[in-house]
Length: 248
Image (cartoon, rainbow, N blue to C red):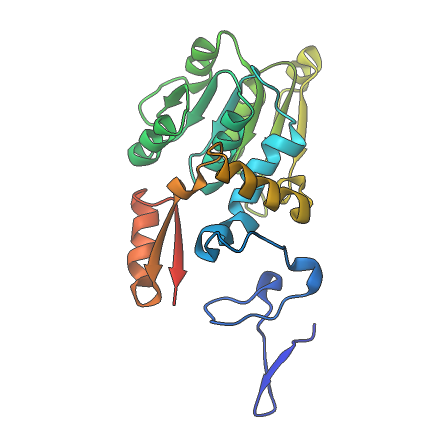
């Protein structure tokens, strides 16, 4: 409940989410600081701390996706496409991204998605997903936190598959999965926070994969000067940019 900052005796709350926002300097606890390669630009590495870490960590840590295993990703934003990049880094098999935004779906294909599904143009997403994946996927990730979509993700997995939930739900959101279906397939459902990551380990690993050309997350990022913050917001809304980064 305390703040590390004050001005003229008045408290300034500068530790939102244990970091500052819209500032040129930040005060961070040492446990929140990660050593990164000095030759890589901070405006590139910054997004590793949240959305990119969440998506990639879910694949690498929570699901421990193996080469050849298949994955369905519901939502092609920063988290979903970071999960896709991590899946490709470990040589995943079929990867399907379910995303209504045409620009984001196109980028997903450019980044290696085997298939994309536009739910606005597909009457039965589950049937289409099973068709494209040969009956179902090894694992699924939902980034939307929309119960109806989560139910599709739950039904999409093969026996002993895991559904990882990473989206922030509405306070009254409730999952109504069919229990018999879960029993028959032995499906697991797990909520994942920040990719179940140890940041001091995962972030340097992602930076290393990037250097090796196996994790091109720079394709998700575009920088905007701070006075163009509204342009950054609009670019996100349109799908033209996945992860805008403001620079001073």
